[in-house]
Image 1 (tube, one colour):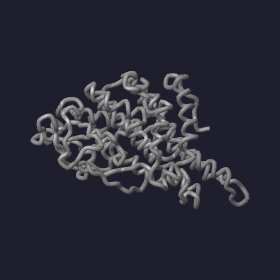
Image 2 (image 1 turned 90 degrees about the horizontal axis):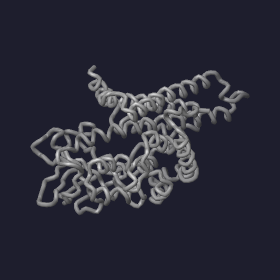
Image 3 (image 1 turned 180 degrees about the vertical axis):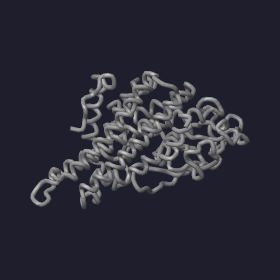
Image 4 (image 1 turned 90 degrees about the vertical axis):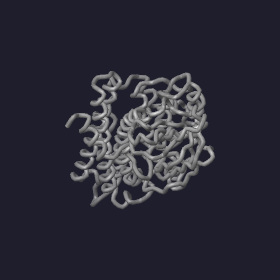
Length: 389
């Protein structure tokens, strides 16, 4: 009842076929296990291979690299359907290649692309993106990790933190400062650092949510990295990072809408089943009003996400407008998720406080959605600057 008929300008038969396929995969391979995986703090590495075998991992990537070329709505379909399982930890780690690989595909050398991308899309290797540092997150231009040129290698020293898939990653796309004298964005580059590089150490971080997603603090102690691992040209990493952020934020907005919907569906199912004073809980007007508010906020956020995805696909607007509205879409969608998670827990009552419900898990996870990829405050400030406010 929460899924509106697909609009043909957004979703065609091929999108709906993919949706059905991914939904079956999630119902079979992910949803039955998320509670156990969350409690265990991890999920099987084999899940990467199974997702790749279905073609999920390679959606939107070039065929010559083992992917399946697709439009932006295909990517949104995958994000939405995996989110239906109501476990951000699985989705974050299973999809970490979605923020690690695009800069390599867009700017890496042919040799680097062929070495890194195909095994990741095949589910044989894991890729992670390492930008955030202990001293700063959204202020990428201020990063301190250095890469000093030494012959045909860079010597990398510094730290990264809050890195999704950081413990298991075979390849790390790392933001480094290759021009120490340039303290601004012009001195930043991207390097691919192999997970077995001497001098790289990792420590696991414990979190409020996303329990089954490994999150790491990384330390680079004079790591020698081949110059061939440079992504693009020296000093051009900042622009690639910003472009990558925009795609990540739109995907996160789509995910947040599906998480909000998952909370609403669980709350409705509970309200229909739960008897209070001789009648189902859903017959109470105050509960129906809560559910309507949840649906309305989710639909509003999703409408903005779809409209923006359409405009991006057809280049209907200026670059600054896309950036601004992507920021606003992420804010609106994560606020909808926060509202729905809170209301769902309230409707479930005591059960909403128990581990094992989607709403309890998503209630804990909503904050990382509002912070990761750019905090709400940063998003609003960036949107204002892009719009000239």
